Image (spheres, rainbow, N blue to C red):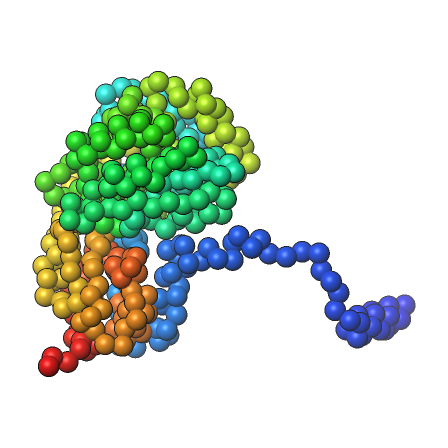
Amino acid sequence: MENGAGNGMAVAAAAAAAAPAATWNFAPNEALLGLTALSVRGVLGRVKAGMVAGGGARPVIPMGHGDPSVFPCFRTAPEAVDAVAGALRSWEHNSYSTCVGLEPARRSIAKYLSHNLPYELSPDDVYLTSGCAQAIEIICSVLARPGANILLPRPGYLFYEARAVFNGMEARYYDLLPEKDWEVDIHGVQALADENTVAMVIVNPGNPCGNVYTYEHLAKVAETARKLGIFVITDEVYAHLTFGERKFVPMGVFGEVAPVFTLGSISKRWLVPGWRLGWIVTNDPNSVFQRTKVVDSIKSYLDISSDPPTFVQGAIPNLLENTKEEFFDKTVKILRETSDICWEKLKGISAITCPSKPEGSMFVMVKLDLTCLQDIKDDMDFCCRLAKEELVVLLPGYKNWLRITFAIDPSSLEDGLDRLKSFCLRHSKPTK
Protein backbone atom coordinates (compact mmCIF):
# COMPACT_ATOMS: atom_id res chain seq x y z
CA MET A 1 0.00 0.00 0.00
CA GLU A 2 2.76 2.43 0.89
CA ASN A 3 4.59 1.83 -2.41
CA GLY A 4 1.34 2.18 -4.33
CA ALA A 5 0.49 5.42 -2.59
CA GLY A 6 3.98 6.75 -3.27
CA ASN A 7 3.75 5.86 -6.96
CA GLY A 8 0.35 7.52 -7.17
CA MET A 9 1.69 10.72 -5.64
CA ALA A 10 4.62 10.75 -8.03
CA VAL A 11 2.27 10.36 -11.03
CA ALA A 12 0.05 13.17 -9.74
CA ALA A 13 3.07 15.43 -9.24
CA ALA A 14 4.33 14.71 -12.76
CA ALA A 15 0.89 15.43 -14.21
CA ALA A 16 0.70 18.72 -12.32
CA ALA A 17 4.13 19.74 -13.57
CA ALA A 18 3.11 19.02 -17.17
CA ALA A 19 -0.19 20.91 -16.90
CA PRO A 20 -0.41 24.48 -18.20
CA ALA A 21 0.01 27.29 -15.66
CA ALA A 22 -3.13 28.04 -13.71
CA THR A 23 -4.77 31.47 -13.54
CA TRP A 24 -4.53 32.47 -9.91
CA ASN A 25 -7.18 34.56 -8.22
CA PHE A 26 -4.84 36.43 -5.90
CA ALA A 27 -2.54 39.41 -6.44
CA PRO A 28 -0.55 41.74 -4.19
CA ASN A 29 -1.99 44.92 -2.80
CA GLU A 30 -0.75 47.43 -5.38
CA ALA A 31 -0.82 50.24 -2.83
CA LEU A 32 2.02 48.56 -0.91
CA LEU A 33 4.41 48.06 -3.79
CA GLY A 34 5.45 51.69 -4.06
CA LEU A 35 5.73 52.44 -0.36
CA THR A 36 9.33 51.29 0.13
CA ALA A 37 10.56 54.66 -1.12
CA LEU A 38 8.46 56.33 1.58
CA SER A 39 9.99 54.54 4.57
CA VAL A 40 13.27 55.12 6.37
CA ARG A 41 13.92 51.38 6.32
CA GLY A 42 13.29 51.18 2.58
CA VAL A 43 15.56 54.12 1.77
CA LEU A 44 18.18 52.82 4.19
CA GLY A 45 18.17 49.49 2.34
CA ARG A 46 18.79 51.24 -0.99
CA VAL A 47 21.63 53.32 0.43
CA LYS A 48 23.35 50.28 1.97
CA ALA A 49 22.81 47.98 -1.01
CA GLY A 50 26.22 48.67 -2.55
CA MET A 51 28.25 48.27 0.62
CA VAL A 52 30.84 45.50 0.68
CA ALA A 53 29.84 42.67 3.05
CA GLY A 54 31.92 42.74 6.21
CA GLY A 55 33.03 46.31 5.66
CA GLY A 56 36.74 45.49 5.43
CA ALA A 57 39.02 46.96 8.08
CA ARG A 58 36.85 50.01 8.84
CA PRO A 59 33.58 49.88 10.76
CA VAL A 60 30.33 51.12 9.27
CA ILE A 61 29.32 54.50 10.73
CA PRO A 62 25.49 54.68 11.04
CA MET A 63 24.65 58.37 10.68
CA GLY A 64 21.34 57.94 8.90
CA HIS A 65 18.66 56.74 11.29
CA GLY A 66 18.22 57.40 14.98
CA ASP A 67 18.92 54.32 17.09
CA PRO A 68 21.54 55.39 19.62
CA SER A 69 20.93 52.34 21.80
CA VAL A 70 23.62 50.35 19.95
CA PHE A 71 26.32 52.56 21.50
CA PRO A 72 27.39 51.99 25.13
CA CYS A 73 27.25 55.71 25.91
CA PHE A 74 23.51 55.65 25.14
CA ARG A 75 22.36 52.85 27.45
CA THR A 76 18.97 53.12 29.10
CA ALA A 77 18.48 53.91 32.78
CA PRO A 78 19.01 51.08 35.30
CA GLU A 79 15.64 52.01 36.79
CA ALA A 80 13.97 51.28 33.44
CA VAL A 81 15.59 47.84 33.29
CA ASP A 82 14.56 47.16 36.89
CA ALA A 83 10.99 48.22 36.11
CA VAL A 84 10.71 45.73 33.23
CA ALA A 85 12.42 42.96 35.19
CA GLY A 86 10.07 43.59 38.11
CA ALA A 87 7.03 43.48 35.85
CA LEU A 88 8.17 40.12 34.46
CA ARG A 89 8.98 38.65 37.85
CA SER A 90 5.62 39.70 39.26
CA TRP A 91 3.81 37.14 37.07
CA GLU A 92 1.04 39.73 36.73
CA HIS A 93 1.68 40.81 33.13
CA ASN A 94 1.63 37.65 31.04
CA SER A 95 -1.96 38.04 29.88
CA TYR A 96 -3.61 40.05 27.12
CA SER A 97 -3.96 43.76 27.68
CA THR A 98 -7.14 45.74 27.19
CA CYS A 99 -7.27 47.29 23.72
CA VAL A 100 -6.57 50.84 24.97
CA GLY A 101 -3.79 49.70 27.32
CA LEU A 102 -3.46 48.88 31.00
CA GLU A 103 -5.09 51.48 33.23
CA PRO A 104 -2.09 51.97 35.61
CA ALA A 105 0.17 52.65 32.62
CA ARG A 106 -2.29 55.11 31.10
CA ARG A 107 -2.75 56.85 34.44
CA SER A 108 1.03 57.20 34.87
CA ILE A 109 1.50 58.60 31.36
CA ALA A 110 -1.37 61.07 31.90
CA LYS A 111 0.31 62.28 35.10
CA TYR A 112 3.74 62.43 33.43
CA LEU A 113 2.49 64.52 30.49
CA SER A 114 0.30 66.77 32.66
CA HIS A 115 3.38 68.26 34.35
CA ASN A 116 3.86 70.58 31.37
CA LEU A 117 0.21 71.39 30.70
CA PRO A 118 -2.21 73.99 32.11
CA TYR A 119 -4.81 71.26 32.72
CA GLU A 120 -4.86 67.67 33.94
CA LEU A 121 -5.03 64.72 31.58
CA SER A 122 -6.98 61.63 32.60
CA PRO A 123 -6.24 57.99 31.78
CA ASP A 124 -9.12 58.15 29.28
CA ASP A 125 -7.09 60.67 27.26
CA VAL A 126 -4.32 58.09 26.73
CA TYR A 127 -4.26 55.20 24.23
CA LEU A 128 -1.22 52.92 24.26
CA THR A 129 0.38 51.80 21.00
CA SER A 130 3.22 49.63 19.76
CA GLY A 131 5.64 52.53 19.50
CA CYS A 132 4.97 55.83 17.81
CA ALA A 133 4.90 54.11 14.42
CA GLN A 134 1.63 52.38 15.30
CA ALA A 135 0.28 55.66 16.66
CA ILE A 136 0.88 57.23 13.22
CA GLU A 137 -0.72 54.22 11.55
CA ILE A 138 -3.82 54.50 13.73
CA ILE A 139 -4.28 58.25 13.30
CA CYS A 140 -3.93 58.06 9.52
CA SER A 141 -6.39 55.15 9.39
CA VAL A 142 -8.92 56.93 11.58
CA LEU A 143 -8.81 60.10 9.47
CA ALA A 144 -9.01 58.40 6.09
CA ARG A 145 -12.13 59.13 4.08
CA PRO A 146 -12.68 59.72 0.35
CA GLY A 147 -11.09 62.98 -0.76
CA ALA A 148 -9.42 63.78 2.56
CA ASN A 149 -6.00 65.40 2.66
CA ILE A 150 -3.46 65.94 5.43
CA LEU A 151 -0.78 68.64 5.68
CA LEU A 152 2.75 67.33 6.32
CA PRO A 153 6.02 69.18 6.95
CA ARG A 154 8.80 69.21 4.36
CA PRO A 155 11.39 68.10 5.29
CA GLY A 156 9.65 65.59 7.52
CA TYR A 157 9.38 62.02 8.68
CA LEU A 158 8.54 59.82 5.67
CA PHE A 159 6.33 57.40 7.59
CA TYR A 160 3.48 59.93 7.72
CA GLU A 161 3.25 60.08 3.95
CA ALA A 162 3.51 56.30 3.63
CA ARG A 163 0.61 55.71 6.02
CA ALA A 164 -1.50 58.52 4.56
CA VAL A 165 -1.05 57.29 0.99
CA PHE A 166 -1.71 53.69 1.97
CA ASN A 167 -5.00 54.77 3.53
CA GLY A 168 -6.05 56.71 0.45
CA MET A 169 -5.43 60.20 1.80
CA GLU A 170 -3.70 62.91 -0.18
CA ALA A 171 -0.48 64.18 1.39
CA ARG A 172 0.08 67.91 0.92
CA TYR A 173 3.37 69.45 1.93
CA TYR A 174 4.02 72.75 3.61
CA ASP A 175 7.59 73.98 3.89
CA LEU A 176 9.72 74.37 6.97
CA LEU A 177 11.85 77.49 6.58
CA PRO A 178 15.59 76.85 7.09
CA GLU A 179 16.34 80.58 7.22
CA LYS A 180 13.97 80.86 10.22
CA ASP A 181 15.24 77.88 12.23
CA TRP A 182 12.86 75.57 10.39
CA GLU A 183 9.68 77.32 11.48
CA VAL A 184 6.38 76.31 9.86
CA ASP A 185 5.49 78.36 6.78
CA ILE A 186 2.16 79.54 8.17
CA HIS A 187 1.13 81.23 4.90
CA GLY A 188 1.95 78.03 3.04
CA VAL A 189 -0.31 76.04 5.38
CA GLN A 190 -3.18 78.45 4.79
CA ALA A 191 -2.71 78.27 1.02
CA LEU A 192 -2.72 74.45 1.00
CA ALA A 193 -5.77 73.84 3.18
CA ASP A 194 -9.29 73.43 1.84
CA GLU A 195 -12.60 71.94 2.99
CA ASN A 196 -11.14 68.42 2.70
CA THR A 197 -8.13 69.09 4.93
CA VAL A 198 -8.45 67.15 8.18
CA ALA A 199 -5.25 67.87 10.09
CA MET A 200 -1.70 69.17 10.01
CA VAL A 201 1.36 67.42 11.42
CA ILE A 202 4.22 69.07 13.28
CA VAL A 203 7.29 67.38 14.74
CA ASN A 204 8.78 69.04 17.80
CA PRO A 205 11.66 68.74 18.62
CA GLY A 206 12.25 68.33 14.92
CA ASN A 207 13.06 65.14 13.08
CA PRO A 208 15.04 65.54 10.85
CA CYS A 209 15.85 69.25 11.28
CA GLY A 210 16.94 69.43 14.93
CA ASN A 211 14.78 72.50 15.57
CA VAL A 212 12.83 73.36 18.72
CA TYR A 213 9.72 75.53 18.39
CA THR A 214 9.10 78.51 20.64
CA TYR A 215 5.90 79.04 22.60
CA GLU A 216 5.04 81.98 20.35
CA HIS A 217 5.41 79.97 17.15
CA LEU A 218 3.33 77.08 18.47
CA ALA A 219 0.64 79.60 19.41
CA LYS A 220 0.56 80.74 15.76
CA VAL A 221 0.25 77.12 14.61
CA ALA A 222 -2.67 76.54 16.97
CA GLU A 223 -4.47 79.70 15.89
CA THR A 224 -3.97 78.79 12.23
CA ALA A 225 -5.43 75.33 12.82
CA ARG A 226 -8.41 76.88 14.58
CA LYS A 227 -9.08 79.25 11.68
CA LEU A 228 -8.89 76.38 9.19
CA GLY A 229 -11.12 74.09 11.26
CA ILE A 230 -8.50 71.36 11.49
CA PHE A 231 -6.65 69.77 14.38
CA VAL A 232 -2.95 69.39 15.05
CA ILE A 233 -1.08 66.08 15.21
CA THR A 234 2.09 66.75 17.16
CA ASP A 235 4.88 64.19 17.08
CA GLU A 236 6.77 64.63 20.36
CA VAL A 237 8.88 61.47 20.39
CA TYR A 238 11.93 63.65 21.13
CA ALA A 239 10.23 65.63 23.91
CA HIS A 240 12.70 67.15 26.40
CA LEU A 241 15.74 66.11 24.33
CA THR A 242 16.81 69.73 23.94
CA PHE A 243 20.27 71.18 24.47
CA GLY A 244 20.13 74.74 23.12
CA GLU A 245 18.57 77.92 24.47
CA ARG A 246 15.01 76.84 23.67
CA LYS A 247 13.18 74.52 26.02
CA PHE A 248 10.58 72.03 24.91
CA VAL A 249 6.98 73.28 24.92
CA PRO A 250 4.26 70.65 24.29
CA MET A 251 1.68 71.51 21.65
CA GLY A 252 -0.97 70.32 24.10
CA VAL A 253 -0.58 73.65 25.93
CA PHE A 254 -2.78 75.05 23.16
CA GLY A 255 -5.44 72.31 23.30
CA GLU A 256 -8.14 74.85 24.14
CA VAL A 257 -7.34 76.85 21.00
CA ALA A 258 -7.41 73.85 18.65
CA PRO A 259 -7.69 70.14 19.51
CA VAL A 260 -4.38 68.31 19.52
CA PHE A 261 -3.37 64.68 19.17
CA THR A 262 -0.01 64.16 20.87
CA LEU A 263 2.01 61.17 19.68
CA GLY A 264 4.90 60.01 21.81
CA SER A 265 6.82 57.06 23.17
CA ILE A 266 9.53 55.99 25.59
CA SER A 267 11.80 55.07 22.64
CA LYS A 268 14.06 58.10 22.49
CA ARG A 269 14.10 59.70 25.91
CA TRP A 270 14.70 56.32 27.54
CA LEU A 271 16.82 55.05 24.61
CA VAL A 272 14.76 51.88 24.13
CA PRO A 273 13.25 51.91 20.60
CA GLY A 274 12.94 48.13 20.67
CA TRP A 275 10.57 48.14 23.64
CA ARG A 276 7.71 49.37 21.40
CA LEU A 277 5.67 51.43 23.83
CA GLY A 278 4.05 54.57 22.49
CA TRP A 279 0.86 56.57 22.92
CA ILE A 280 -1.81 58.71 21.38
CA VAL A 281 -3.03 61.44 23.76
CA THR A 282 -6.03 63.70 23.26
CA ASN A 283 -5.26 67.27 24.34
CA ASP A 284 -8.82 68.43 23.98
CA PRO A 285 -10.38 70.26 26.96
CA ASN A 286 -13.35 71.27 24.77
CA SER A 287 -14.17 67.61 23.90
CA VAL A 288 -14.11 68.18 20.14
CA PHE A 289 -12.79 64.67 19.52
CA GLN A 290 -15.66 63.24 21.59
CA ARG A 291 -18.35 65.17 19.71
CA THR A 292 -16.94 64.25 16.30
CA LYS A 293 -16.54 60.58 17.37
CA VAL A 294 -12.87 60.54 16.43
CA VAL A 295 -12.01 58.86 19.74
CA ASP A 296 -14.66 56.20 19.04
CA SER A 297 -12.86 55.47 15.78
CA ILE A 298 -9.55 55.11 17.63
CA LYS A 299 -11.08 52.62 20.05
CA SER A 300 -12.58 50.65 17.15
CA TYR A 301 -9.21 50.52 15.43
CA LEU A 302 -7.50 49.35 18.60
CA ASP A 303 -10.06 46.54 18.83
CA ILE A 304 -8.67 45.06 15.59
CA SER A 305 -4.95 45.76 16.08
CA SER A 306 -2.11 44.42 18.18
CA ASP A 307 -1.12 45.79 21.59
CA PRO A 308 2.26 46.80 22.97
CA PRO A 309 3.85 44.09 25.14
CA THR A 310 1.88 43.74 28.36
CA PHE A 311 4.97 43.44 30.57
CA VAL A 312 6.33 46.74 29.18
CA GLN A 313 2.97 48.36 29.93
CA GLY A 314 3.20 46.89 33.42
CA ALA A 315 6.64 48.47 33.87
CA ILE A 316 5.55 51.99 32.90
CA PRO A 317 4.48 53.29 36.36
CA ASN A 318 7.82 52.38 37.95
CA LEU A 319 9.79 53.43 34.88
CA LEU A 320 8.26 56.92 34.88
CA GLU A 321 8.34 57.33 38.64
CA ASN A 322 11.81 56.03 39.42
CA THR A 323 14.08 57.15 36.55
CA LYS A 324 16.51 59.70 37.97
CA GLU A 325 17.08 63.12 36.43
CA GLU A 326 20.78 62.31 36.27
CA PHE A 327 20.07 59.82 33.50
CA PHE A 328 18.24 62.39 31.38
CA ASP A 329 20.92 64.99 32.07
CA LYS A 330 23.63 62.59 30.92
CA THR A 331 21.80 61.86 27.65
CA VAL A 332 21.30 65.56 26.93
CA LYS A 333 24.96 66.28 27.77
CA ILE A 334 26.15 63.71 25.23
CA LEU A 335 23.76 64.99 22.57
CA ARG A 336 24.97 68.54 23.20
CA GLU A 337 28.55 67.34 22.75
CA THR A 338 27.83 65.41 19.55
CA SER A 339 25.72 68.20 18.07
CA ASP A 340 28.63 70.58 18.70
CA ILE A 341 31.00 68.15 16.97
CA CYS A 342 28.63 67.89 14.03
CA TRP A 343 28.13 71.65 13.74
CA GLU A 344 31.85 72.47 13.86
CA LYS A 345 33.04 69.72 11.51
CA LEU A 346 30.34 70.38 8.92
CA LYS A 347 31.66 73.93 8.56
CA GLY A 348 34.85 72.54 7.03
CA ILE A 349 33.21 70.29 4.42
CA SER A 350 32.88 71.73 0.93
CA ALA A 351 29.58 71.17 -0.89
CA ILE A 352 27.64 70.93 2.39
CA THR A 353 25.95 73.77 4.26
CA CYS A 354 24.21 73.55 7.64
CA PRO A 355 21.69 76.41 7.91
CA SER A 356 21.27 76.33 11.69
CA LYS A 357 22.77 74.58 14.68
CA PRO A 358 20.54 71.80 16.00
CA GLU A 359 18.95 72.47 19.38
CA GLY A 360 16.97 69.28 19.91
CA SER A 361 16.22 65.69 18.82
CA MET A 362 19.08 63.69 17.30
CA PHE A 363 19.22 65.04 13.74
CA VAL A 364 20.36 67.88 11.55
CA MET A 365 19.55 68.70 7.93
CA VAL A 366 22.29 69.94 5.61
CA LYS A 367 22.14 71.34 2.10
CA LEU A 368 24.07 69.54 -0.65
CA ASP A 369 25.56 71.75 -3.39
CA LEU A 370 25.92 69.53 -6.43
CA THR A 371 27.61 72.27 -8.42
CA CYS A 372 30.71 71.65 -6.31
CA LEU A 373 30.79 67.94 -7.09
CA GLN A 374 31.39 65.86 -10.18
CA ASP A 375 29.62 62.64 -11.17
CA ILE A 376 27.00 62.94 -8.40
CA LYS A 377 23.42 63.05 -9.70
CA ASP A 378 21.38 63.82 -6.59
CA ASP A 379 21.11 63.25 -2.84
CA MET A 380 20.31 59.55 -3.23
CA ASP A 381 23.31 59.00 -5.50
CA PHE A 382 25.48 60.89 -3.00
CA CYS A 383 24.35 58.68 -0.11
CA CYS A 384 24.74 55.43 -2.05
CA ARG A 385 28.27 56.29 -3.16
CA LEU A 386 29.25 57.51 0.30
CA ALA A 387 28.08 54.23 1.82
CA LYS A 388 29.95 52.19 -0.78
CA GLU A 389 33.21 54.14 -0.70
CA GLU A 390 33.44 55.27 2.90
CA LEU A 391 31.06 52.97 4.81
CA VAL A 392 29.24 56.02 6.16
CA VAL A 393 25.46 55.82 6.09
CA LEU A 394 23.50 59.05 5.63
CA LEU A 395 19.96 59.37 4.34
CA PRO A 396 18.72 61.65 1.56
CA GLY A 397 16.40 64.39 2.68
CA TYR A 398 14.58 66.06 -0.16
CA LYS A 399 15.71 68.08 -3.19
CA ASN A 400 19.40 67.54 -2.39
CA TRP A 401 19.26 67.89 1.36
CA LEU A 402 20.86 65.26 3.61
CA ARG A 403 19.68 63.88 6.94
CA ILE A 404 22.39 63.27 9.54
CA THR A 405 22.04 61.83 13.02
CA PHE A 406 24.58 62.77 15.66
CA ALA A 407 23.20 60.33 18.27
CA ILE A 408 26.23 58.08 18.05
CA ASP A 409 29.43 57.65 20.01
CA PRO A 410 31.45 60.91 19.76
CA SER A 411 34.59 59.23 18.40
CA SER A 412 32.55 57.37 15.77
CA LEU A 413 30.85 60.62 14.80
CA GLU A 414 34.19 62.37 14.31
CA ASP A 415 35.41 59.45 12.20
CA GLY A 416 32.25 59.51 10.10
CA LEU A 417 32.42 63.26 9.48
CA ASP A 418 36.11 62.98 8.54
CA ARG A 419 35.20 60.29 6.01
CA LEU A 420 32.38 62.49 4.71
CA LYS A 421 34.89 65.31 4.19
CA SER A 422 37.29 62.97 2.35
CA PHE A 423 34.48 61.80 0.10
CA CYS A 424 33.49 65.36 -0.81
CA LEU A 425 37.11 66.29 -1.53
CA ARG A 426 37.56 63.23 -3.73
CA HIS A 427 34.47 64.07 -5.76
CA SER A 428 34.93 67.83 -5.88
CA LYS A 429 35.20 69.52 -9.23
CA PRO A 430 38.74 70.64 -10.10
CA THR A 431 39.37 74.33 -9.63
CA LYS A 432 40.10 76.24 -12.81
